Length: 188
Image (cartoon, rainbow, N blue to C red):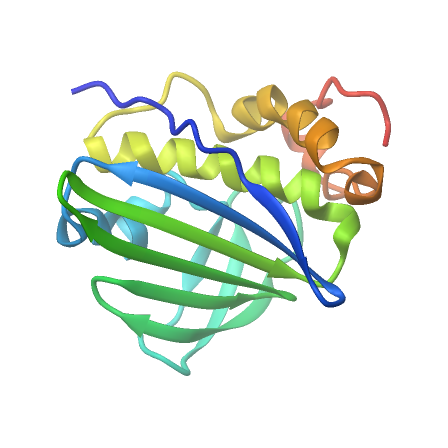
């Protein structure tokens, strides 16, 4: 079965001084079928931007590392881990909440990303959009026809346009262009 990329773009909202980007993706599979792709290391390598080292249990310390050395490793925490419905991580200075909800046709995944710096909302929104597109292929047992970096380059400008200049002041991490080449977008 060939996977289709999700059509739901991330939505930006503000909660006080924090920025929140929320995505909703639907799968024709049960939460129990999606959960392994969402949480297990052998599947994460296909779609998640870093490794996740640490126990899969609430309160466990975590260590994250970029596979291609685009940035330095960093620490976090498994805030909540309730299979097969919720995985919430403190990912550096961001909080990532993945919630799987059963639906008649399969399941819906809601990813909520909370962060302090509004200026990286467009960059990170495009990044999570790309990652979720890759997850869609992984859940279906397929391989995406593009890399995460190529997909990010394809969707980044739409996030800059939709989220606006205040949400677009931070560009790719320092080592990203060294590893993946120029993003092809005008400087922000």
